[in-house]
Image 1 (cartoon, rainbow, N blue to C red):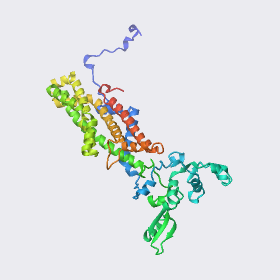
Image 2 (image 1 turned 90 degrees about the horizontal axis):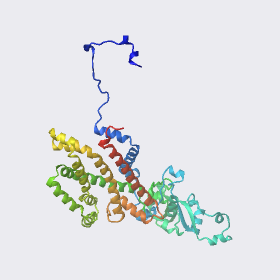
Image 3 (image 1 turned 90 degrees about the vertical axis):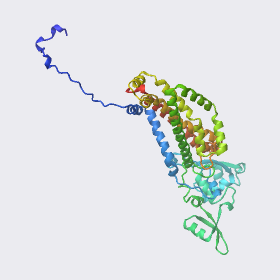
Image 4 (image 1 turned 135 degrees about the vertical axis):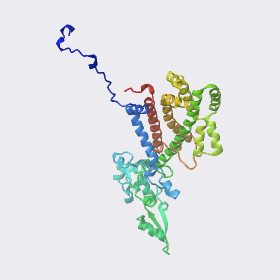
Length: 449
């Protein structure tokens, strides 16, 4: 529209006193640095999922050992009979996974005896050829040609059978239990006795066959669930894994806190003030950093053993150097920036400049480093425990479980599978979580969408 076409009659002439200029108040709230970091972190869905998984891991670390109250039999012989049971998990067993089944190879006569026994019902799942079941063994040439059979069994029912009724050598001697009269009456009241084999003439000694699972675990084989299976000593791997994870993570958190406090303090002082202190202390750090960690760990273990506090000290003797170098570099990098010089000109104290102006700019790198330090410690500790260098006397670690599982991985893969999955998940989630923290605390991204 041309200016000549404007209706001049609609124009109103205002006096100067009629003109009012007002400022409009901002309706949005001020967002602080940490609130902005949290908002950015929430938008990183991968890091949020990783954080949720880490929370689940810490939940199981705290509650896992108490979720399955299980005490192995006091008798080592009975405990060993519960060894190497495969994983069995409720609900999942109905899907055909983690159902307690296992494929075994045994002598033909024992398998057929087990199949024909009324006590062996529901033990054998599959694997017996129809020719051996339908034909007369005395007239079947196939019967004489087969010496062993490979079958799939419910391992829990199978272990209960061979330890309650008949062992694999077709001998009843190994499944007999000797009771006094009082013990026999107690076992009878608890419905543990299957049948009585003999009674002494004076009636004070009973030899009987008992239900093995009821006798040792006070429950039937069908009601017994070892979610991650058992180790060679009949211990629940689920409980062992989370006990080991608890020890590893507690030591990891302790090491990270100590290394962070020492490294950040010394690195901030050296990087901010510089000068002679920085020069001399940096030379000391170079000398200390030249000492091999393996030498420090080995000497401490030889002198003080493999107690947990010894491992923590070994990882902190030189472990703080990484935090020191990072803090020194960040403080040296930011101390001469314009806004730092302006704050110093306005009379800000060194402590305010260090913690109010420099530290927030460097926290992104530091938080990422600390988040990655925890899985790094767990992995390193597990590696040395796997190699046998770290061998706790009164505790178990994930590395020790890996070492035990590696020896029998061909026949008992669950002993290696679950600790390995735990280590893998821990490493991946902490890496993704650390990446999310790095982006969230990056000052250059503040206020961005």
